[in-house]
Length: 438
Ligand code: SF4
Image (cartoon, rainbow, N blue to C red; front, top):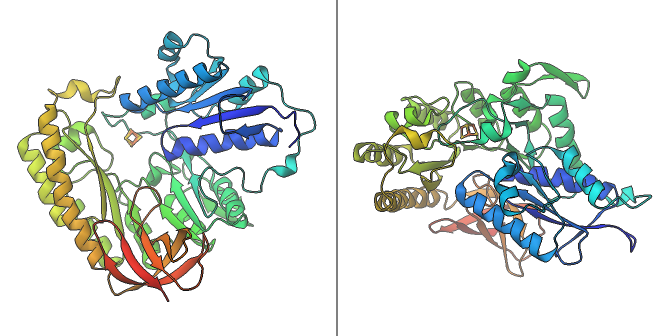
């Protein structure tokens, strides 16, 4: 790119979904001839993609805006926190523009206004798959925006609105482009993946000469035909999830379900207003595993939700022992400004939250370690994330990037990032597997 290309410094905060938004904005700006720089100093404008989900995330976002103001002074704010501009304006009256999540056009307009695009952009310099913030061998694929649920601890529907699904053909076109550009693993994301298509009344769209309905099962099956790993995130246990487990058993999509259960005690789930919660979840997990013995289940939980009693928490611990989930994250409840959960019951004292969190983590650590031990002796495919002189770092089908564990692979021949190799598992520890390429 020429010497006079306008320079943009980009800060991306928040969840994988925000990352996808960042990628879209950057891809578009690059196509117009803007250049990215790593530092705020010397950039013509700074874009901060914020996260406003938790109060701690807001604080981080405000910190990032402050830093950009101090080091550069020309700042455009976008993302979840931009949906409530008041707080940002109060602290930083001089930011150039504030836009909400998914307002790509508005962000791009604001950039044009701050620093006009250079003439004659070298469009060809944009790689085929766009500018990826994630490594090239895996990519997040967002299938919908927004959410129809109203979980009491969450303000995402307020920030992002109701569910808007992309037509199946749209998603498949993007997926094919990514695969053509070398992506080996697609991570399907949205706020509520199994609700996909509800807003479209599951309408079909035409892709590759045939009709694909905007249904979770149909889309998963079509993605499964692309010949790459397909991983499903943020799935709620609606009844039709059972059908997708069939695709996993057939090897069409990865035997991996990321289901944020958040709790197990009926009273807490009711207070959380979680979608598709039911008391027979343990039976369903059992049936899924019968059908697909290799299935790995990852989940997240919240402890210390307002009104959570000792009995509720004990119920959760017992449930965990029975469910034997593979990977689990746990958060101490944090009140989110504007979320109805704060009004439901008296808050759980911090020290109780802390104690419950430790007990939860200890109980689960044993379960996870045992599940991993069960993999020793097997020969499994591993995707390589980081090459190394003697040991490479990769992941099994049971591990998503960033959030799950790794497989450390000893190998005599050099392994490249994105390779999928067969590994004999020799050892496990609390989180990871270790083995040798065969
Ligand atoms: S499912 Fe619940 S937690 Fe997830 S985005 Fe929707 S309202 Fe929020």
